[in-house]
Amino acid sequence: MPGKTIGLHQAAALVPDGATLSIGGFTTQRHPMAFVYELIRLRRRNLYLFGHSPGGDWDVLIGAGCVKRVELAYEADEAFNTVGPRWRRAVEQGKIEWEDYSNFSMVARFTAGAMGIPFMPVRSLLGSDVLRKETLTTDERSADPRTAAKKAHVMTSPFNPADRVVLVPAIHTEFAVLHVQKATAAGTVRIEGQSYADIQQALCADTVIVTAEDIVEEDELRRTPELNPIPFFVVKHVCHVPFGAHPYAVYNYYDYDPLQLKEYHESARDDAAYRAYLDKYVYGIRDHQAYLEAVGGPERLAGLKSSPEFGYSPDLKRRL
Amino acid sequence: MISMAATKYSLMELMTVISAREVADGEVVFAGTGLPMLGVMLAQKTHAPGCIIIFEAGTVASRLAHLPMSVGDPRAMRGAATAAGLNEVFTFVLQAGRVDVGFLSGAQVDRFGNINSTSIGADPRHPVVRFSGSGGACDIACLAKRTIIIAKHEKRRFPEKVDYVTSPGWLEGGRSRQAAGLVRGGPDVIVTTMGVIRFRVDTKSPYLASFHPGLTPRGVAEETEFALDIGEAVETAPPSAEELRILRDIVDPERVFLK
Image (tube, rainbow over all chains, first blue to last red; front, side, top):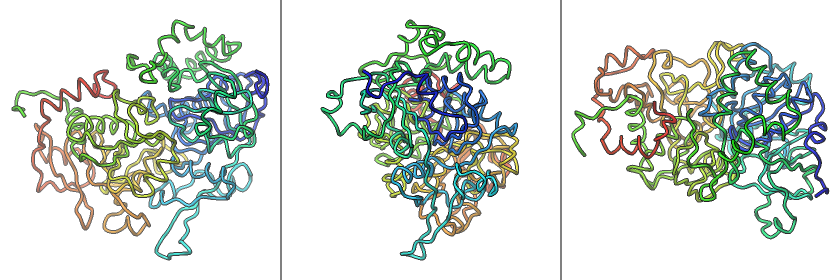
């Protein structure tokens, strides 16, 4: 296996306090949660997160006090809880710095970074307060090179004076961490189902870390290279982490875990209960294997397995 | 169609059915999270089997077998013709002008159909209540050819002016949307648990097109903070037994959204 494969703890330890980071996945799908819990156990502080629609991956990092500033479009587990509870609390208590964008504009920013150009024009945002209002001040922006000097800029097309676009600044992060279905020790990556913005997030980061359900032979993924969207040499480290996105879904592998999400969201209403949740599932847990035991072990996880026909669990009970 | 007199349904079910009817067969529909997923799946299972459902996480033309709880749900993969990522659908489908209908919900909707899903309070830096944020809603509202809005009808949810315009509607009315530089679109209808609100062609001011059975136009206006012209309102055609059966037994048998 070796090649680029390293242990999960070793990989998480590469991310220092104050790092800029983007995390793969989308709301209740395919977040590298095992990696996120390692960051919390390492007690990382002052992280700068960039994302489009994160869910509990950000919410738990924010709740554990790991995050200083975020740039985002959305933060929730969608129909499981229409706003991330610890995100909401952090905003309302003034404990986090943030800037609001939309999903398209954040993805355009990742794309610009991935393309090596300074900004991307979009036709969205015009007329909205997402464009008109800013949460970070000019001073806060200019004091910190991790944040773009300006939120956005409206430009008239040089080719048609009647046409206006919004320029949004490119994102470059020090780290991108993805959780995918399959990867090789050389760093070739296979994403099944929706790719979200994982590809752009990887391509605008200095260091790409991939956690994968399965580590497979290089020849297996090279049989269909058109399905491997990220050049393997861009990926620096690969970790083998089965059920690495739990309690979130991984298409063709397992579904989201409504029981665990319910416990998370109920505990998050109250500071003491939330602290107890973190103790039970993060701080008091040695590693990912112990986490999987803590959430119910093989029996519980078997109930989440995807059906080969659907790629998810059609009989999963989702409202508890 | 059978007589509706004896058919019982909740206002939530009625709202979902009425919103689904706004989708025409064959249209390209870009659906946001929450109730729009319910409405668009009902449309696909009833009168609009050929509607093309786009979810922003990257799927095109799902043939839904189970209701998604996320626009990135593995359930959106079912029967999809294409699966890619956000960039592909936002750039090449939505921004390029290939979406007929944007389907959105919102915490607050004002008289010009501007939606707030960001925060309550005068200063977004110090909000009284913080919500999830735009997600793709701002983009959908800016770039679809028309927008259907679905929202529970409560007075505080329908203010004169939203605290934060997350998703631009007709902005200040009249031609202000075009003046802002938006190249197309705008809200066509707000379907609520009390009635159906539409907008005047020229001024974009709102009027009550229909009120739900058992309610009165005046009653709807009283539950709406912004001024609502009720002069032309008729009673909403109730859901058919077939629409209700499909909604309850096929679209949301788990009661993910229906109570």
